[in-house]
Image 1 (cartoon, rainbow, N blue to C red):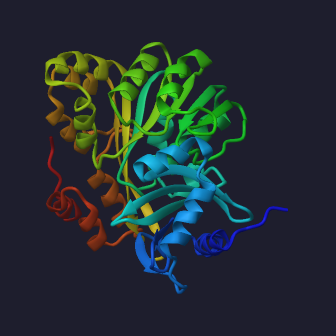
Image 2: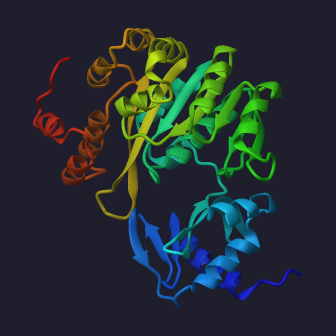
Length: 367
């Protein structure tokens, strides 16, 4: 029987309380009590402060051996941690002002479906994108916006409906899939392969139909995704970007100015769609509901990208009748009319509140 050290037991108790309360994140700052994020709001936990030696001892005890040198050299590290009887957590440990801090996110064991995420009519657009035979699908949003859950729900739909070989590269694995109609190979950085770069270089030799790359983090990753898409693979990934327009801009930032024309051809040829997401407090205040902005990169979108007319894409998002192309304002308008979010919160989270205000008055601009 493994002996649990006092610092691990204390943090496990905090994690157990968090999971039982439906908390998404646990934040530990040396010499402070634990903090949790519940429905997007930060709250302190009634407990004794966690000292810096206790926080550091927890990291040293549980960081995988392959990452120990990284922690010693760089003072920050990402890894996965499993607490018996509680669950799995994504961990980021780092130093601030010479003290150790830890942020832990609960990795839910059950893969969600579209209905459980409360996506409503957005589900139709996501299913349409799931049917793409190749190309790149990007799920975008800020940290904590539910990107991973939405992407997992899309893969879950594929698993239940299509026979595909799916290889995931994650840091760490967020959802564990059970093979249904599809076959999953899930590789975790640090446990199954030493580095993200090595996993990326090997993935095309593993005969996948679909590749999940945990995050589109740099040019090398994006170029690998383009190569995979051009050779008949469907690539899922996430990006930290708030809107479709910002997401598209981020893709071009991977390339130097002298390669923009080449980048336009590559992106226009491989991009299949963006799914951007944010979470808005529900009307009753007991949780949050997703609002989405989705772009289906059809022939019109691809031509605009190829011609460098990215600014016209926002007009398509506002005016399209396609179930897989609509703006944040369209989705927030739907949520307000359905009584799921308040007008006040809808306007607060809208990227263009003046336009949404006009929409709510029945005024729509034709583009």
